[in-house]
Length: 307
Length: 307
Image 1 (cartoon, each protein chain N blue to C red):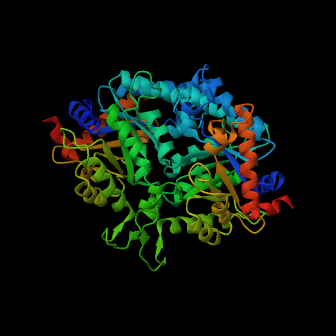
Image 2 (image 1 turned 30 degrees about the vertical axis):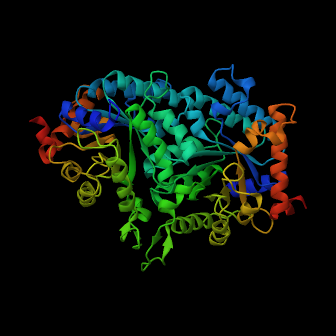
Image 3 (image 1 turned 135 degrees about the vertical axis):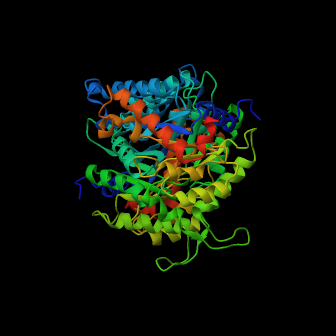
């Protein structure tokens, strides 16, 4: 096992910051604070994200850059993404690259080498990457292998937070000799659990986790039981409608085993009336972060992290 | 309907070049011709891909850059990808960006704007993008909408060419009031067909197509019937094991309705003994391209394109 096992590192970071809250870096140009709008777009999103990192680095275990909003600006945006990623690491944050990659084995190996190689000479050096399971087991193996080699990890999409996620994910597979009747997301979850169980760290979790949306609270509880060794990445908290109570099912009894992502609700807090008293957009980020941390602590097992 | 309907444009390009062969640009560093190995990596892959485009631009309708091999080099590699994309367009080729993106609706909209906006001010200006269906209908809609607005399109993964693609894609959903018993890839295919049928161009095909691997020839025939309005992108021909006869089932009676991708078998032809007589690695690319075009023409309906 790698001395910097990803599951252990993430749980240690959660314990240290006493919260599972992760701040999502989704720099939508249209929502950027007016102060940044005179910069060129790539410069604006880089400055925006670095300022957010400055505010939250002491408060949360990780940030989750959403690649789409950087790729939208072409190569300049991708350069900004890389700079933001490195800046977050320098500030001691775990970096969850939300790029939802997935391809056949030999190509997946290139994505894995791209994002999960943490050597100093590697370009991205992320701590983990979100991955799509549609292409099956041999499309996940290269990510698992590179992750084990470099102490990085993946979060595999199981149940996504969007309404349309039900279309295929909630359809039921009939029973076979090999499997009982189960939904697609349950079948994917069982595979994630088997990958997580194959490389469990000292914290009891593997380096392969699952994306399970906060918008499906009952499923979160059921999937927590189904994948006891998989750390959850829970999107959909805040702007997408999941409440602090809703996300609680993703956490274990110690308040570990999951990270809860909030993006818009925190990074664009300056737009909200409730933070109108903030002295700057960064101050609004700080207030919104504190509020989210407190809400999660008071309504879930995350409160136990405060010991 | 957009005056430059993607399905019509692609079929017209196939007709003009009299072949459905597409050359996949998968610049694996380890396989680059020795002549390029003294350049820095990003420069080497850009030079390599542009040289291939020079050779094949008069012969094939489209190229398919595989984003992973560029992303592997970080922002410099992504800049190379963008330059290669623009170069291919200048040379009159349709550009199929193989990046297999997919995310929830609001983020999918950013990916769609990134890759499928063909305005001169847009960064990527691709003709189409490969997309992963796991996140469901609302994750595909933004790509369809941007495609319809800009005359671009998508290929949605239905049945992938890798062995592990069977793990989830071939599992059977039980019958429900809304659906008969069907596999996941059949359910995805039915959805693709409904999207394709909603925007059929003069060629009889929509701007939403399907990825169906050449490594499953019987399924290719069955899926051709199942998705009469979806253009197919058929990977797996050549190095992955699909023969020219195997890919035939993807084409309609006129030899239209599908593009057949070959990557390694063409771009690294210089490594193969059968092309040892080539005077340069570019000459090997030319010979391998001609051979693939001829094999497809003689063993499938593509021969009818030669009129």
